[in-house]
Length: 395
View 1 (tube, one colour):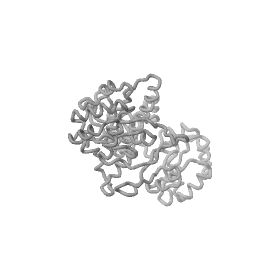
View 2 (spheres, helix red, strand yellow; view 1 turned 90 degrees about the vertical axis):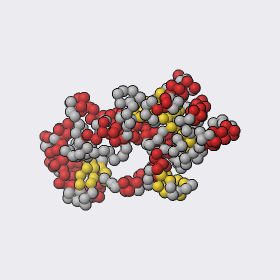
View 3 (tube, one colour; view 1 turned 120 degrees about the vertical axis):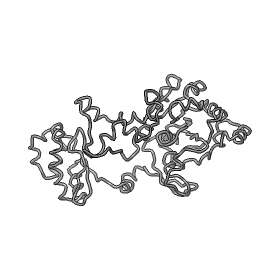
View 4 (tube, helix red, strand yellow; view 1 turned 180 degrees about the vertical axis):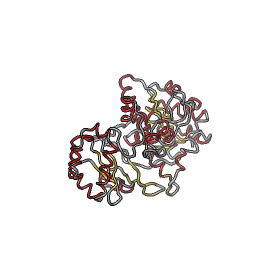
């Protein structure tokens, strides 16, 4: 069966999270992704936990790819990339700005060889600006993007979102940019540079906060699990010490919530008469609702709230979330039979296409596992490959 990105050839020269994640999304959608690593490999290979010496985090972010080791610090290694890029559609790289130029694999250099190449650079701060040469990782982007300053409880310490959300988000923006550039190339015949930065991600996703800052001059502060523009919209502790979340985002839902909670008199309170008023009086409103949830267990409240069609859910532990029947039905967890580690559970890409489904998950490549077969497939002869191997240019 055809895949959405069938026939698209990608050279991925990335490490850590954002770039490899972008590459795995492209690979899952059917692109032929060749992960080019230095002789010592992507550092994430050494991250635990491991199984039979296989790093599971590396498997999560590099499935469905082929592995090729090239020493780009040697001119011969650069020449291999120059030759491969002639037939490539996309190049992904995630070094600090300036590094690709020194290694001879910059957009300027590779686009001279193949003007149709889509070249995506992923970095902490982007390809321009005063911070372009600084190192950037997820926690730095969360901090400098304002996310940590408005996450957590009021008057508490700055809190990082548990997931490396700037990394994953940056990888997603990179994929969106690549797909847009591929479509543009159909019309122009030319490739282009895609610039994706970690810092941009929390800024781009802070739509509620930006609306209040630009509209009211309000600087967002931490609100725990509450919402800036909607109330009530947060987690409440129940009699069994589990938390349920509710999202009464409209007037109709507010009315249904009051009926389900058995407090119709709150509908008469002028302070809570409209969505803006409920946000303005959020603290008073939440204080009135909190004791109500102490009277029943989470299961009891979820039953009542769902019966009233009020959006709600249990705050689950991670193991509960992974084993949820809805998550299993969506096929988010794939079982891979790894050649070294045996059976591994891998998170799949949540893109569902009816006619061109994503490809089945396969294991991530071992370091240099496909070096010879990749070069053969890209037109290198046996003598050339032996020379590259003997010169430690390819491993």
